[in-house]
Image (cartoon, rainbow, N blue to C red; front, side, top):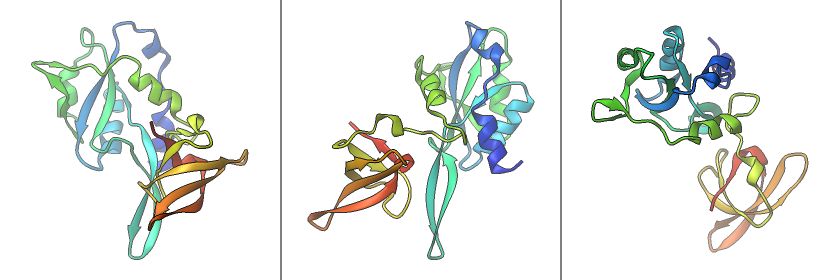
Length: 186
C-alpha cells in the first residue's frame, strides 16, 4: 500500500459509524513509526481507526525531505462500541501497544476532539489548520528549514503564500512560506 493510499483511506469514515450512538473514540498507544501497520491490521479486523497526519520535514545527509507523519507520534484513535465489539483484541493487534486505559476499561477521548481533527483533514489526508490564520497572529511553522519556530504572520495572500516574521538574532526576519505549513497558536 502506498503512502498516498494510506493517507486517503485515513480520512474516510463509514456511514454506520456516524449512526451508532454508543460508539465513542478511544486512544491507543502504538509502536513508534508503526501507525500505518496498526491502522491496516485494525481495518482488517473491522475496526475504524483514525491517525491524524501532517507533513514533517526531515533532515538527513544534508538534504531536506518532506513526508507524511503522525501528528501524535505513537498514538492513534479507534472508534469502538464497548458493548458490541470485542475491544480487547485491539491490544493484540500488530503495531498496537495497548488502548489507553482507566482501570480495566478503555478511557474515552473527550467528545468532539477526534471529530474536529476529522473535520480539519484535507484532501490528501493531512491536517490543515490554515483556516484560523489572520495577519498579526502568532504562528508555529510546521515544516521546512524553520520548522518548530514561532513567528508573527505579516500577510497572507489568496494563493496560499504567507509572510512570517521570525525572531532570529535580536531581530525579525521575513520568511515566505506556504500557508499550509503554519498553525495559529494562542
